[in-house]
Structure formats: structure tokens, C-alpha cells
Image (cartoon, rainbow, N blue to C red; front, side):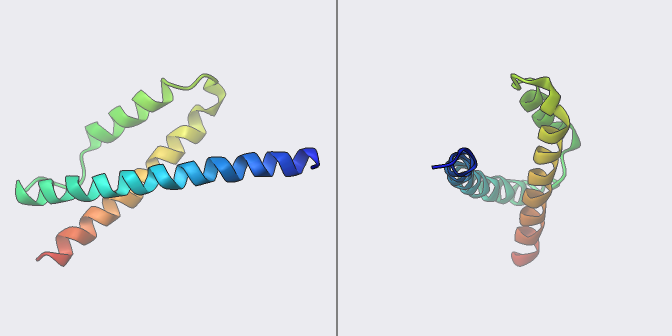
Length: 92
């Protein structure tokens, strides 16, 4: 196996784990959405989003990746806000 093939195999394994974890996160996001709907809470919580980003960027071993990790979490939270908004609309 060439070096690039090994790197790609490693990426595939990481992607598999990311998919598993993202699905778990999405299922939990739906529960949060249900809770927000039940208690008439807004989908957007800017302070929570900022705290999530700060907490996760602080976990980095290599701070050069801070912009990418910030973008990753912003993108992921945008997806989850869209899911919660759709959930609110479905149950109206």
C-alpha cells in the first residue's frame, strides 16, 4: 500500500467515526428541539453557540487549526438549527 493510500484509509476510518458521532449528535439535537418547542424556547442561543466554539477550540492540541475548528462547529450548528427550525414547522 502506498503512503497516500494509507492516508486515505486513515481518513476513511476517521470519517466513519465522524458519521457515527454526527448521527448521535443529530438525534440529541432533535431531543433538544423537542424540549425547546415544549418550553417555548428559541432555536437560536448565541451565547451557547459561542461557548461551544470556545470550549472546543480550547481542546485543540495544535492551535493552528482554530479557524478550521471554528468553521466546522459553526457549520455543524447551522445544520442543527435548520433541523430544529424544520421540527418546529412540522409540528405547527
